[in-house]
Length: 335
Image 1 (tube, rainbow, N blue to C red):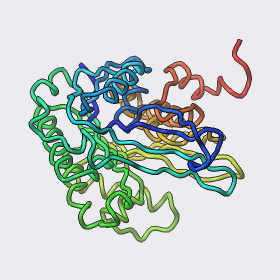
Image 2: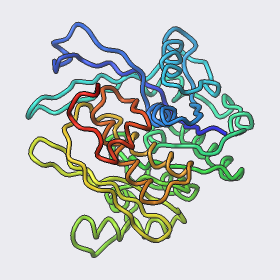
Image 3: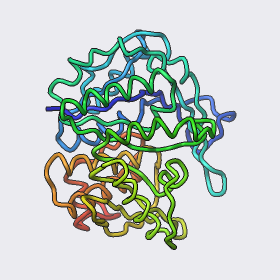
């Protein structure tokens, strides 16, 4: 049985040495996407994984497939066709200058122009125990939204666990919340496990709270969301800043109660994709029947380590995650 994810593959073009794009004459190439990142970590943790997507039938698609396979992720469910791959250019910030992401070719990419008929759903959903979707995918195009909801519906009918990461980004929806809301609600009705923050619940789903304080508000609106959409598990992280360091604590609402990880304080090397490290930890814990406390500690440590490794795709091992949970690793040298 495999863990699968439906989502876009993008080419990441990174400007080196904290330069601005206009200053650089070289770019570092890798391939990424929420599905790629989540499955990369799960593969490292010893799970069988496969990506559901469409890639161009040219050298760009070949390069992306080679990269995905190098992460231990199967490409048996990848469809080929079209000419374009979505890209994003990454300029790493420094001090008061923020990190900047510029997208290109997403609308005309093979993934965003695919049709439902491109995917053999009967074959794709065979031998599948869990399937992951991301809210970013819903923002791509009308036909991609239709495909995602159809796959999720078919998976639900077969008793496959459906995982949905809200990841609502107003910029991708051109701030049209009313356009996004019904698609999110449709996907949430199908979700068994969901990744959501209090902002997703209040700003997008318009769930109200009279509680004071971030933690109390989060517990109130997420428990209401779980009840409204019949979701058995909602998880996420609470983030704060301490001097130049990040402080993260994971939380999970499961069967009417909250459980929290300990707080982690650390410096960030590469934040993009770090949330996918957390998500993969939650999924891994459920697949392998961890206790609630073990799930949230493993997931939070997984997300923290993803902040400290280069690139979007998490690549730390299961043993490295447990070592961080047990406070067995630090800034020293392993010999």
